[in-house]
Image 1 (tube, rainbow, N blue to C red):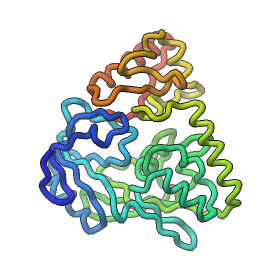
Image 2 (cartoon, rainbow, N blue to C red):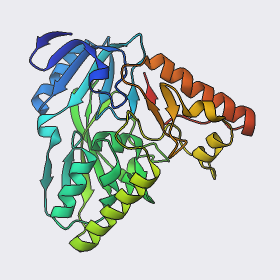
Image 3 (cartoon, rainbow, N blue to C red):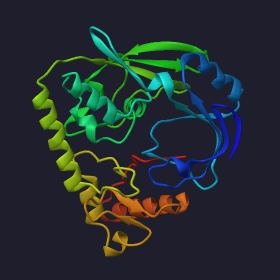
Length: 289
């Protein structure tokens, strides 16, 4: 790995920050700490390199051949929460768990579900993340983003975003900077109980303290991905260096430093088996670059 500037890394090994402890190298990784540094994106990419925003790297895998382009990670000012009278301004780099705890401490309800999601706010807005009957779109007022081509900071109302299941603000050539979120004051004891209940559910049904990316596949309409997977595969898929979780068939666990291409092949095999059994093509939640 070569370091060119204080906030620019070249030939960066993505397995160092991946939740899967697996991944190819990134040609350039640029860490942006404030709005002034946003202009570096255009300077480093020169309109020629692909640009990849990365968050907590919990739902992303870089293949063996690596990523030829500029990956951008927001830190510093974009990892802060600012309370205003009518909304919370939350940086894209803020981790879900941190945001949920912040809301609990300040008696703000509605964000308990984020306590169990291992991502960042920017990633949540991009994916319209959710669980336990909640989605990020339900709490979002607007998105502040950087238009890379125009080198301009813009804002869009959540009502003007075409939200769908696991699809949020995904306009091309943009970088999500902040989300403005609703403030609803609630009972702190109730907020804490909901967070605890969600944590118990997660621990009982999902693998913990292993290399894991969360759900592998989206749920098809009126179907549960885990049921389709479990009914399509034999016991051999639950052993080995890459294996399905015994707790939840829509999660897999893998050894550290394993080839990301092997992980992708494992996923493709599951898709093939489910399609053969149920005539349903499962769509990945995990983003593979």
